[in-house]
Image 1 (cartoon, rainbow, N blue to C red):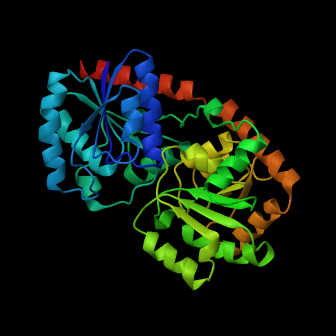
Image 2 (image 1 turned 180 degrees about the vertical axis):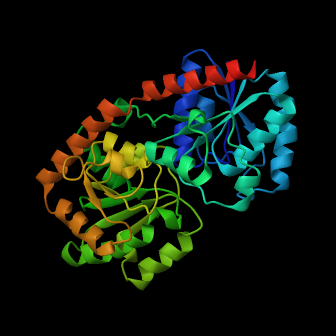
Length: 367
């Protein structure tokens, strides 16, 4: 099959990791794969894997934007020339683009729902879901059914998959090397990898670190990602007088480098479809703490492979962080269990094969 992925950008984050995994896996299975996007940070990772990149001006969150139309006209010629058979979109604006392309060219469009959408009027008027919708967790499927009345037979639940061997760290010496690379020394490091958005709960993590530092003054917080809240979060660290203990990293070429420097990973989201960054941290053998929301609850079994806390509760979060930072044996146990859990339940190969089946189903529907 000839497959075209459409995504707003290729910066570090869950959607880019998801598309890279799928595109690489399906390329290895003999399919011809293309990615249309505004590009940025990780574009080279796709090109290295011989995945053709098509630049389009789609970096927008506006559902009615000239950028969508410009991208449609550019891609409509491309999909005909390359005989594209599947269009696969990954955000609200790229869903609209995919829907317009399907109407113009007749090529089958599907979308992946990576989280939870707000119920805005335009979504009801122009749903643009595609012939099939991949939900990354059962919680996202229920969201689509309950909040948008999407027919169940159009939804396919396919969990994100992880290449467990890729994230395994070889030894403790390697950990110190990555810590030193980030200037952390042997100080305990708490971290998060996520876009800087209010829904990810960074505010509560920063507030929690204020309490953590009262007991462990040398602790460090790594915040990896970029987004609209960066200035607000920077100001919060200054207000709390903890800016020297908080390191902001806009983007990295390989998330493993920052994960391997961490001693503990935290995902304090207020909403979360599944949590790919959380899964990668677990695959890396890190002990994890997450909010008791959405797909996080299907990943973390409290007390077995991580700890769960109530969302928006910085006090509970600080207690959980201290509990693990002060107990190396428990950190190791939870980290080992987390790695085994991902290995047993979230296979990269399974995700690729299940997605391929959805593509085949859609091509058959088209004909």
